[in-house]
Length: 75
Image (cartoon, rainbow, N blue to C red; front, side, top):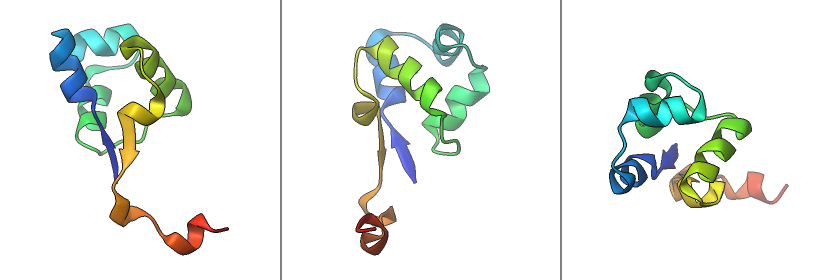
């Protein structure tokens, strides 16, 4: 499952989901789904979000360790 720090980062910047959505060019529902782990963003969207927060994509989006298949990682 893809996890994000979007919720925490929004709270630090004191912006709501609608404001972030407008900034990165998506609907508020997309931000909701990202925060709830129900949507994997496109690379373009992930980069827009990371740029806004002045972070890397990897600092904002990450997978649970138990979701990794070590055999697939070696290929």
